[in-house]
Structure formats: C-alpha cells, structure tokens
Image (tube, rainbow, N blue to C red; front, side, top):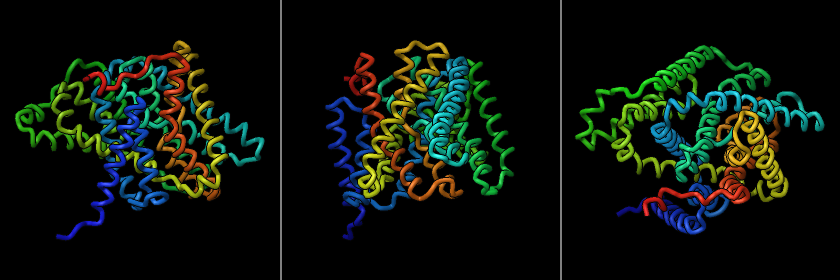
Length: 394
C-alpha cells in the first residue's frame, strides 16, 4: 500500500501541537501560543515539515471565518450597538494617534508621506483572530473589556477598506476603484442588518427548524449560512470575517446556537489552529536572526506604545484605568490585516524590500509575543488568573 509522504508531516505536526498544548496548559497559557510556535517549528526555517505556506494560509482563512461566526453567536447585538461610542470614536482616535506617532518618527528620518501613512495604518490594526480567541477561551467576551475590544476590532475591520483605497491613491498605483460604491453599499447593508438585529428580541429562520432533527444536514446547513454570508460580504469588497460574524449574530438572535455549535465546533478548532500555524510559518527565520535585536526592540516598543495609546483613549471615553490598561494590552499587537497593508506598500514602492521583511517579521513576532504580554499586564494589574472553559468544566 502506498504511503502518502504528507502523512508523516501531518502526524509530526499533530504530536508537536499536542506536546506544546500540554506544556502551555500546565503554564496556564492560551493554546494560540502553541499553534504559533508549532508553525515556526514545522515551517521551512526549522523542521521543514510543510513548505506550502500559501495553502495553509488559505485553510487558515477558513478558520478565521468560523472563529468570527462562533463569536457572532455569543455577542448581544443590543450591547454592541449601545457601545458604539467606544467602538467608532475610539477606533478613529486610535488610528489618528498611531499615524501621528509614526509621522513624528518619519519627520525625524525624512520619510515620504506615503510610508508614514502606511506604517501608521499597519501599527493601528490589532489581531481580531488572536484577541477573540483569547477572550473566548477565557470566557471574557461578555465582560466590559471584552465588549470594548470586540467593538474596536469590528470597526478596524471596516476601516481596512478605506485604508487600502487611501494607500492606493497615495502610492500612485492608479488602481481601479470602480467597486468603491459596491463597498459603500455593502457597509450600509451590514450596518442596517446590525441595527435590525439590535432592536429584535428574536427572529425566525424557518429553513432551520426542519434541520433540527437531522444531524447530518445540520452540518451543511450551518456551513451554508456561515460561508454564504461571508461570500456575500467578500463579493461586496468587504472582509469575509465581517460576513461570518454577521451570520453568527443572525444565528444567535434566531436562538439556534446550540446545534450549530455542536455541528461546527470540531471544524473550528482544527481550522483556527491551522490559521495560527500559517502565521508562525510566515517568519523568515534567517532574516529574524540577522535582525533580531532591531525586531525585538520594535516589538517591545509597539506593544508598550499601543497599550498606552489604547488605554488613554478608552480612559478618555470614560472607562476606569485598570480596565483600560488591560484592554490596551489586548489590542497592543499588530494584526493579520497589516500583512495586506505591507504588501500594498511593497507593490507601490512605498517601502523597500528590506523594510517589507522588517515589517512582516515585526508583525509576526508581535503576534507570537502578544499572549505573554497580555498575561504580564494581567499580573501587573493584579487581575485574577483567567478561567479557561476547560477549567470551568472540570
């Protein structure tokens, strides 16, 4: 019988994740760290078990869609709408302050305006996948800090589209903008749907009622809703993650969360793990080794500065200091959408090849160290140790 050579790589990756997961569970660290470290180890720079990072990234993107779908089912549309001031005003202030900080550095280093704008946008975006995974695992999504972080992350996802358009204009690439009105219409549709959900106690989805008795079709029904709406928002030029989040909220208001959770949970766990592994595999270890000191300084600087920028803005909007510092630590890392902005920068010659590699490495290392930074801030603020869902069941 012929043995597929990929089988040994898959088994090796599974055992590595299991070993790292057990170790990090003992250290009371989130599993996302195990996935990121596993990605670094199995990538071409260390063990070389997988070299097709693009394929893994595609599977991982599906994992993010499912993650946001599950988060949407747990979120109250009314609470999200009531928190609009923190979500919208806080995000806009955060982006402007981030660009302003980079502008100060850029003025000293004589950077062109396009580079200042691109790097400001890059550091202003936090990781939706990392933060929501951690908050979900720790059962903190429904807390005031969790709601603030969630609202800011969603507005950041909306902001990616105008960021890309602005960078395209500033970079002088002459890109097509014929779909800008499609994106605007898509944003209006999503906002209108969120407003509708926030005023309804419950909605009825007749199609789902007859699936309750058929577990096999439940799986395909849940996947159709999740990826169908994600596909629609993607076609409208918006984030597919936003669409899956909206689908989750619809399912949540329809009170169908129990069987949907049961049907999709195993897929979510595996695909989210693949996403974080693909993030770890993006690290060019040779470049990191050659520029380790500079990268570590940049990551530390970004984590500290972003923490206090976000904390100051949330404090200005009325939150207590202790909560704002914790929320600031949650939002401190650079997010996965910043990879897209960096790619725009290199294609428009806003940054050099060396600058692009430095930005990519800094983003990846900030994602890797973000959970440790959050745990450190928890201890400094004397917050209780997080209770994972696993510990709550035991």
